[in-house]
Image 1: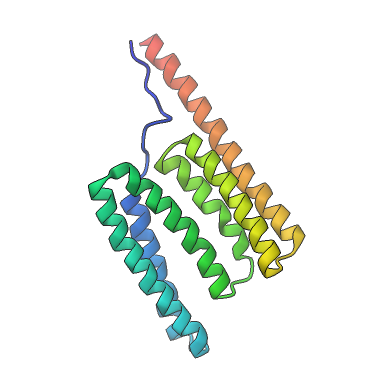
Image 2: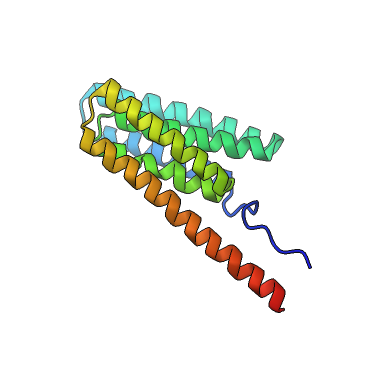
Amino acid sequence: MKHPDFDGEYLTSPRLILIFMLAVGCVVSFGAEVLSLPWSIVSTAMLLAIAVAITFVLGFIICGWRPQAGRWFTLLGLSLWVHAYGLWLQIPGSLAWAIIPTAYAACLVSISAALLVAAGESVIVLLLVQQYGYGTDAALATIGAVWAVFFAIAVVSYQSRQQAKWYAGYF
């Protein structure tokens, strides 16, 4: 009897993530306009929303053409926009958003992809600390959180696979 392979089973549609990214981009842009923030922040939020909309359209096209490439494109876009919003809009504490792509990598592609994304996010955080002067404590806390999320997802995934194997063998 063939055991299910949960590492290759996709749990979340990348199109759902793309829709979420577009919604956040629109809400941030609209919120900056409604809150009467300085024009420099409003214009940056609008430009980011337009760029996210372009990512949304490209992501939908790529997902229809090559689903696996669409998943990776969505992960890269998510990682890019998580950091871009934090940097360009100067949002305090946005460095902690680095855990989001790691969590979604396990849902979109696999645990192996989540490992790769966690390593990439750690490098990005270290580069941001060096380039933009974030505090070392914030960087270490963020990197610790990224790896904690990865290990938590890996443990839950391993437990789920073990349970599925047991069920497959029992029934």
